Image (cartoon, rainbow, N blue to C red):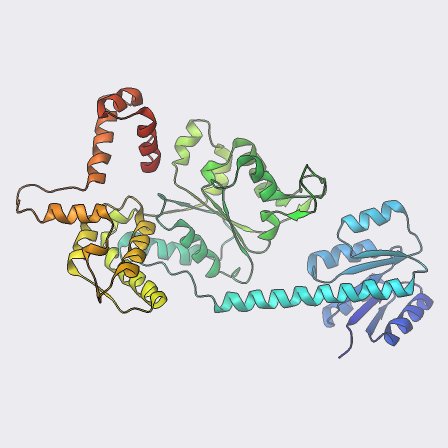
Length: 450
C-alpha cells in the first residue's frame, strides 16, 4: 500500500511531469490533469487523498476547483501551487480553508512534509467519520414509551415528519421528554448518520450564546485564542436541537431568523459567509404565543419554528403509561445494579395517585433511587422519597369520605387559590400565605405559573 493518492492539476505538462516524478519516487500514487474539468471527472471515479492544483489556468481555475471540492469533498485537503502568488491570493486561499500555499518553484522537501501531513489529516477524518457511523448504527434508537392516545398521536406525527425538512417545535413542561422526541425524529430519519447537536438555550450564559451558536475566528474577542466552529456548522447535514428556545434574547432571535431564511452564517470576527444545512428542532416549556404578545418573542420567528408542533402531555395526564414506564426503568437500573426486582402493588398504587410535578424525569429518578436502595427482591414504599411515604400514611387512614392529597399538591392549590383571591397580586398573595415574596416567586417558577 502506497503513501496515498495525489491528484495534480496544472495546465503546464512539464510542471506536472517534474512534480509527478518526485512524488512517485517518494512512494505516492499520482493522478494527472491538465484542466479543472478533467480533474472533476477524476474525482468522480478515483479515491483521492490530496489535490495539488495550480491557481491560474485557462477556463475554470484553481479557485473554482477548490470551491467544488470544499462543497462536494470537504475531507480532501487542497494545496495550491502557482507561479502567480500574491499576498492577497495566498491569504484568500488559506482563509477559505486551503491546506497550504506554495509558489513555484517550491521547496520540494517542505512540500513532501506538508503533503504527508495532509494525507494523514484526510485519513484521520475518514476514520473518525467511519467510527461515528458505526457508533450511530450500534446506538439503539431513542425509546419513547406509551400506549395512551396522546402518545400514539406523537408516535404517528414522528413517523410522518421524520424525513421532512420542515422545522418542528416540541411543547411541554420540564421533564416530559422533549429531547427524547427530538432524538427520535433525528435517529429515525435519513439524517441519522449525521450529527445530532443539542443546545440548552437556558443553560448557556446569554453573553456566550452567540459565539456558541455561530463560532468565532482567532482574535475575534479577548480569549479567542483559536478558531472555533459553532453549533450551526457542527450540525451540518444533521439536526440542530435548540432546547428551551423561549429563553433566547431578542437579539439572538433576530440572528437565528436570518440563518433560517438565508441558510448561511458568519463566524464572529469574520465577514465570510458559510453555508449551513441542518434540520431545526426546538422545544419550549413556555407559551410562545403569550411571549409574542408580551414582546419577549418574535412573531416572525415563531412562524418559522412552528411549522410542525408536537405537544407532549404531562405524566399526570397519561397515568395509564406509568406501569409501562416503571417496568422500563426497573429493568434499566436492575441491569446496571445487577439486581432482579419487582414492584409492590402498594408502590404502583401510590404512583398512580401521585400528581408528578416533575413528570417522566421525576419518575425515572425515583425508580433509580428505589432500585439502588432496595435490599430484598421487591421495591416497597420504604424505598420511596418522603413525599410518597406521606401519601401512603394518609391513605392508610380509614376515611371513606375524604380524598387526601400530598403536601405538594396542597401547597400548589393554596398558592393558586391565594393568587386568585388577590387578583394576581403576588405581594398580597405572599402575605396571605404567610411566606416571603421571594419564596412565592420560587414556587411560581418551579410550577411555571404566570
